[in-house]
Length: 327
Image (cartoon, rainbow, N blue to C red; front, side, top):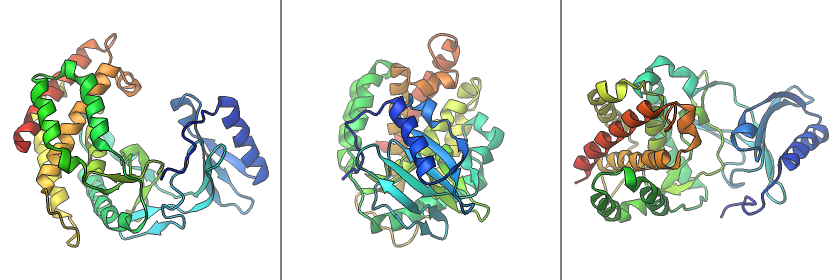
């Protein structure tokens, strides 16, 4: 049910022309251009503008969220979703979205990122919002995404870095029923895609790939990006601390569960450790693929060879830990 023009590739000139057109048509005052343009090889653009009435707007060009996904916004106990003022899904897609004041979750995390963790007070806000979304996300039609297909793709690239790859493949196939469960997921539920308001609500930004995936999928985005920020020496010396942190995170997720959400075929413990297991495979895929965000964090096969080796060793140990909790 995707509403985006997925096949047509728009050029840098197309994007910039649309930016100028929207500014002129709406008489916007350009306030800030975000780094999306550079990070997406000049195929998408996000900027902040001000209307004639002095109200701020976020404009996204090159992709849109599903037009049925809370177009009038959502204000809940722990969660906010911005409203859409204008959306275009034919031709070069774009959306004009409500601007929400707040602080990026990543900017609230501070030096604890060196240990691959999220601050407890920030994590609690994010887990609360995660559970609220499990309830309200069912109120709107969402596209179903095949996570099994993604995991199998990651495995094929990662298996050169996987000890006992046949055993890992068998364990993936054993999880097929769980992988086919359907629960609301934001993608990306990551610290740099979430705003924390002064009231302590979590605001969803960049909702392009919201959809249905296996339970707990979003939690993976709170876990694996932190592995990239860990200090190199901590991959070895803080491994035990990190699994204790993950265990405590799992218990936090369980303690915040809303009573009206029931599961019949799996437990939260199982879902959590499968998310870790799945994301380790994804992280090893990134190593094999030399995905750009690795080099941005000093993990590459040239200047960062030692850091890369310790990162892979850390992932191997974490994979074994997660496997024990799935078997």
